[in-house]
Image (cartoon, rainbow over all chains, first blue to last red; front, side, top):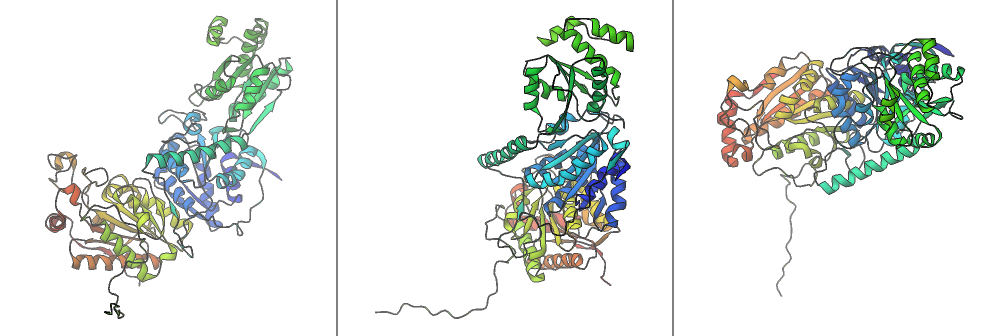
Length: 382
Length: 257
């Protein structure tokens, strides 16, 4: 049964139903409803909830509970995630499963509390010290946020890694009809053999650490971690495609940007433009292979983001110079409108087809905009 | 031919390695009191019979490899975060005994927020705090607990309180937290004090076992290598210099009644 659910609260309930046993967090807008929801819900279920003294403490409490072998999560927003980065690096290195929700807001610095995607680099590329990537999933709807959160605990456990649900304040704050999954029965869940529970009847004590002083040993440990990442890249790529079968041009956007771009796609298709959309859901692993294929099919790509251009680097790596990759972004907490994306699509096609008609038609319909000069764009292609 | 067999009579065992210690050789410098502190904790854990349900959290500092020396389940925390990590373990597994082992840089400098809030919450964990007034692992820099005038590699002219502030008295400070049940300071500089330290460690663990909340034992310890003193003089330095500023004593003792 569908209910009208707020993104942050829906994620919290999905985590509860996925068997989240412990939650540690610190208030920060625009994710605070998630913490508040857990503050009510977890004690009712006799599970652990604690408002930590800081994000630094919260992530280390999460680290501790993860070492104890229970399902654990935290949530925060951009500046808070910055404070958690040290802990995330340790958690990845120690190979304990953790789910982290990042409801991104405008930055850098204190920034603002409006929705943003400007922490793509921070989260997807690692952010903390050392060679690592969390598994990053980016929902575009409240329903997708529920589904991905529900699954994220299994992924975290299967790979013994950090799974980040990366969304922006839009999805965290808005209400949409969505359906919640059933409550999982965790009573029969076996205790992980690596968990710290006290030695109990074991002959050997369990140790969870991330220090390997001998460089060759640390290198071998890194190789092991990289093998795991390779396995994740092989198995966990997720994306959605819209109108790509016959597309001559492609738009790429994740989360809210992808959703805005989808509206623009529908408008473009209604105008006969042969343009499609690829919306990456897993940002790490990135859908590189599919983008490579599409780079052979289309004449140009447009990346739409709520930042100064971050995911575009991964799109360009995938396109590998085969087609020009343009960028349209809004920053500082501004969400792009479908009309803005549509105009950029028109611009891309005008340049690609060496015709000004599409742009002029759109100008007549939607008004003037600061279109990039053809020559400038062409130069950018080289 | 001479009979060379020796008949061994059963003797009374007066000294043995505690079961809660592994057989690994420690990496600690000669004369360092970490080994004494490890042994006291292990003896207490053996006597209380809690090894099967005890989880330790090691610091960043000289005791970073404590997990190799205790035959207990152990986590290695980020610098200063042992109390937060122990909180996470204890909240997830409230019936387990959880303790941290932290040095003065770890606990009193970078981790002062985490240990203070753990005490304020009355987190039901035990903290063993090794105060040797110096950073050992990084090679002898000034600690928040370095004494006034103490020369270290990062206070080569001596700790100047005008620019570097006063040494922090953690036991006194944490005793002021309402959630703290047992906060004491002991010293490892002679046999009598070592015996007193062991008793305190036992009470600290019992405090946790009785669900009474936060307990901490601060142990005044030596660092001959970075103090630049022979081991025996180091023990005298504890007595002559540290104890006058850091008096041994009970700063908070709540009864279980």
